[in-house]
Amino acid sequence: KQRRFSVFAMAADESKREVPLKDYRNIGIMAHIDAGKTTTTERVLYYTGRNYKIGEVHEGTATMDWMEQEQERGITITSAATTTFWKNHRINIIDTPGHVDFMLEVERALRVLDGAICLFDSVAGVEPQSETVWRQADKYGVPRICFVNKMDRLGANFFRTRDMIVTNLGAKPLVIQLPVGAEDNFRGELAEEYRAQMIETIVELDDQAMESYLEGVEPDEETIKKLIRKGTIGISFVPVLCGSAFKNKGVQPLLDAVMDYLPSPVELPQMKGTDPENPEVTIERKASDDEPFSGLAFKIMTDPFVGSLTFVRVYSGKLSAGSYVLNANKGKKERIGRLLEMHANSREDVKVPLAGDIVALAGLKDTITGETLSDPDHPVVLERMDFPDPVIKVA
Ligand code: GDP
Image 1: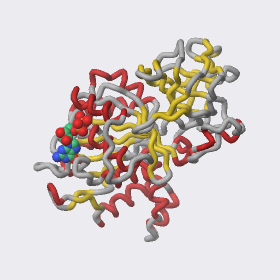
Image 2 (image 1 turned 60 degrees about the vertical axis):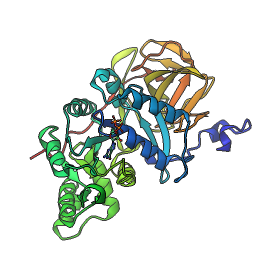
Image 3 (image 1 turned 180 degrees about the vertical axis):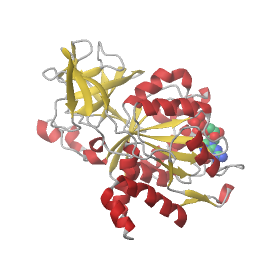
């Protein structure tokens, strides 16, 4: 903590990682209006925030006010990012609007996600708006896990929702947890027969695991997690869990699932871009602090205290206050002023954002959402990641 404010700290120390990049998760929560995104986000922040203590009530914080405002309006219209921590993993939650009226905003958010939680209402199942957002997520190859929420409701139907994931979304569900009990007495569990199904599905992704499996040896827990992550990257399948955010059921397993089943930036395909001077030249940027800086601006917000804030996803290299970056789309240099990191109930000044980070830059002049910022000596316009084709097709 202290290093951030120490004037004497060396530049190199400033950029030491608190959390290794393999333990980063940049995620969004996609949901149909009313499926419970606000409730789930609040619970997630409650369980993960390092400033939050279980059992304490936090009221009047900036985040809560903002959420209440959103709730009052009934639709989620703002997009920002919140940094939080779970079991030594750094989880950046990028707000993904759920309303199709904000499709452009949805696209911009989806573009910078490494993974997403798709939330469904267990009574309504997969609703039309979820289908629209799902297709957008397909376009950007966003790895996903599904959370069937509101399992406490009368008429909740986990299996119907699972079947709709197949018929309406064309995806292959991988049941990780299924409901035991109903309504108030519900809990999520992985029954033996589903565990067998799950293992049979995931060993298809790895010859060695398959060979061992055929000889009667099941993969160990770490291998299982690794194979599931591999499957989500190729969108070979989508892990499905269930719970009730409202009743605080299944939220912690959901956070574990983010950590276990969604990929870190280092597991994803490399970010590809082009040379702005020479658009035929393809450039790759590895998710690493040692690469030249590159990042994507995905949201501009006006903050009552700081003014205009440009939210940037850093893909490679690092940034520092006082330096210049190139807006590679416009060929204009921008000076980096104040750098901020948003937490659930606070904002922190950050000296040197690193690869994988989400940072809010104050005072950029020419940059709009969707544009690439890069090291002026190594210009790049970021395009996309090349995701592998699904290995397992829906039967
Ligand atoms: P959003 O529109 O997706 O952000 O949904 P909200 O989180 O605002 O939830 C919509 C409504 O569903 C609210 O009245 C919530 O209290 C309720 N809700 C959310 N999660 C659950 C749940 O797990 N069970 C039940 N019964 N209601 C829920």
